[in-house]
Image (cartoon, rainbow, N blue to C red):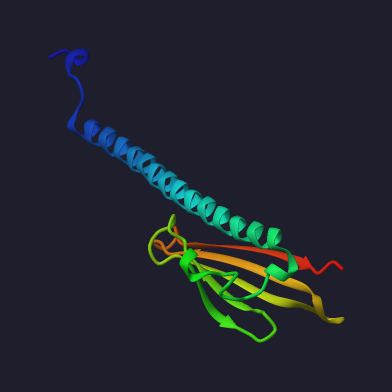
Length: 151
């Protein structure tokens, strides 16, 4: 046979197949990472929207409406009082149906405290939404606001 008509050797083909395999595995890894990132982003947006909805509900209710009480947080609407203090502070759980099972939403209402003292006319509201996932897809969103009692 003439040298020009020989074709590829078996070793050359194995080297090419190995290089292509390494490249394809790398590209497949990018697809997996993109899918995981999209899943976490979707869950984070859903959780953020749930937390914002609760914060807006409390802001529109005003200072008097930011009280842990069954009349304000009706169990029929999906709320469950976790802790209720005599001064109207405490913790309330809320439904997170749009997130995966095992997700949890909690509203914490307390009077604002700083190094300068205790402020009975200022409520410190924290809304936390957590969701489970396969390691890196789990997460938590925490939103915080203050609501004042305006005379």
